Amino acid sequence: MAPALAKDPRCEKGFDPRMWAQPSAQRLTLLLLDANGLGIVSSRLTGRRPACRRHWIERACYADLAFRVLTGNQQPDHSRIRGFRLPNLDALSGLFVQILRLLIVAVGVSNQPPDVEHLGPMLERTIANTGACPTTFIADAGYWSENNAEICTEAQTDPHIATGRQKHGQPPPATTGRIPKDLDLKGRMARKLRTKKGHEIYAKRKTIPEPVFGQTKEARGLRRFLLRGLENVNGEWTMWCTTHNILKFFRFQRAQVAMATR
Image (cartoon, rainbow, N blue to C red; front, side):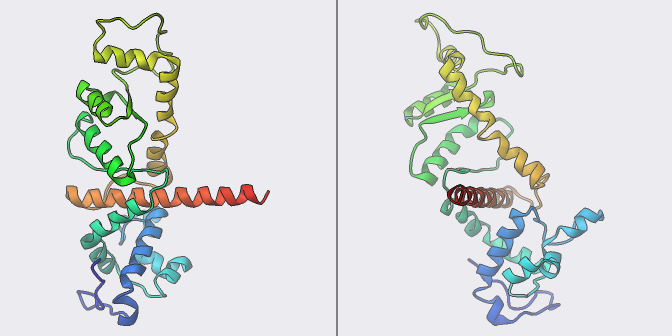
């Protein structure tokens, strides 16, 4: 991981080199993780509204006691924070794999609108990150193709991929009798999701992946990416997912302790 400079590039503010050379990488990493977990992602002021003025990392290093502890009561300005984050996106993204535990297990950002081409790569990342293949793979209609169903089957994961959109709240048509011999792969998948077991499995999309988007957008405030370029945005999104996992893991542990002390 690239160290932070002991002196601001614009020579506006220097720091104690014992504090901000090496272990500065550790302190700035903690600073970025904590700030991101709280939804504070911009290193500098980005808007004129009062809410914007309170939520930027440089200001928090002055005004927030927890941030001052993390930085050793040093106050890096926004150019220092940005100068550390950009060249270290790959290293910071590596933290994502290190904390996986029944959480978000694979991430990626693409500039290609269709979902269908991303199922294979995301399944490969899931296996690479966790060292195991999921027993079941659930995906919405945007990911359906016969090729994707075959990819899942070859990877020995049971695919549950919607083949078309269904009206909200409308129950699936009943499935009775034997599977017709001339039914193609798409028809077999649609029939599979109409069975009681298939319907129950696919319904888990509402409680497993979908809440993540609501939590990230509404609770944590991600409405747009701050960086530019696909590679940088991938790094930024991975940081969001890493801190999501840290927060979820922390709350899980806290709940376990609370249950144990009852």
